[in-house]
Image 1 (cartoon, rainbow, N blue to C red):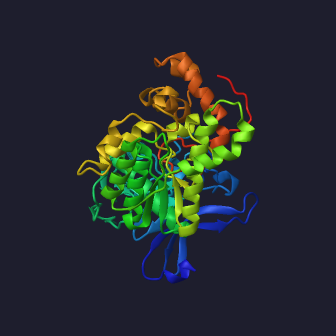
Image 2 (cartoon, one colour; image 1 turned 30 degrees about the vertical axis):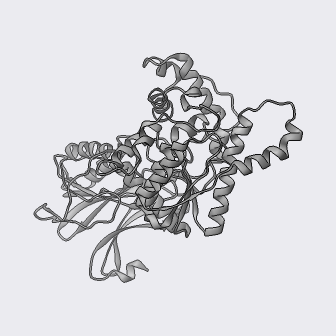
Amino acid sequence: ELVGRVSDTACIVGALEHCSGPGKPLHNSALLIDGGRVLFRARKQLLPTYDVFDEARYFQPGDSSTVAAFAGHHFGLTVCEDIWHEAHPYGRDPVADLLAACPGLDFLVNISASPFHHGKLGERRQLFGRLCRKHGLPLLYVNQVGGQDSLVFDGHSMVMDAAGNVVGAAPGFREHLFFFDTGSRQVTGGTGADDDSVAQVVAALCLGLRDYLHKTGFRRAVLGLSGGIDSAVTAAIACRALGPDNVLCVAMPSPYTSRASVDDARQLAENLGCGFELLPIEPAMRAYGGILAPVFAGLDQDVTEQNLQARIRGNLLMALSNKFGSLLLSTGNKSEMAVGYCTLYGDMSGGLAVLADVPKVMVYEIARYLNREREVIVERIIARPPTAELKPGQLDQDDLPPYEILDPILAAYLEEQLGIDDIVARGFARQTVEDVVRRIRINEFKRKQAPLGIKVTSKAFGYGRRYPVAQGFTG
């Protein structure tokens, strides 16, 4: 259909093609179309199966590289991973094959659907720069933009010269058009290269949230506002992504909730300009207590009563979600999700977990970034020690290591995939590391039932990290 509609402008598009030979039924292809015809096709050769990628399950790899001759130029046409062979050894190099087929190649073209994580922009520039310098060729790199479930495709299309310098770039996280003159090698309409920073993470979270709601048919979001940093940042991201008129924040204080938490939650909603409701949960707590009293007679209170509070709040939020057709946003962060410091069917309830891949320390960085021009996140929320407020005097660090210690251990274990001995060698106490790793392992059952989270680190929980629930790993 597209081929027939493209008559006056040549274009390169990504497409699925049926495989006529043995193997998988489809090819992942790039097509050069002009005058209602496909002039050249490049079938992706390197099919990644690491992290979130599972392409070898669906696609048959191409068996040759494609040199396209068009408008007096010869260029190599490639698809995504075909220029990443240096980072992930495959035993073949599609770019080297291109040069062997056409030593006089003018430039490389690569179309991609490369998902974002913090630091990915720098990784691309370094890898592509080495590629350009190695072969003495410019690179035209075009990347997809948009959110799809847990993944965010950040765009950041760019042109590199043969020395590996970025000579033109599109901004990230939105569509943009700029031009590369194949004769003069000049770029017009580019915006300059973005930097890897917390601003990129904020943009990714906003795009991921906005597209997820749009693609699932929701217009509004609802979330619980505790007066803590995680729900505050989630609310701010939601208001940025959806507009404050489409966000409802709900404070649900218990007898253990401080007055400061309620005041800060209300002030945050005022700062954001979003909806706000106050629903105290003490009546529901008494009702549950009365129902369970005959069964719990003679037993001391423990984490059961704490979890009941979280589940009461989850029920109220789901009722609001159902009644008003809003998507419930879960507000927990990656650090809590990793060690199970969250309540299944309670604060984990929701349709999307905005911060599920954001470590706690980065949550604070985002809050400070959002406050760079005016106070969006109430300063007292940032300054106060983290607490779930499920019992008197409770603080997160009564149960967990300080986040400044916990987060580097989590990054080493989850993202760098280091073992306990290697992490201890970095100066962390063995007992602390072993306890953190134990918590990660025994809480896999919670993560299996968690809502989707937006991926912003190199290794998120979910599709890219598949571990069994029942296991006895050591080391």
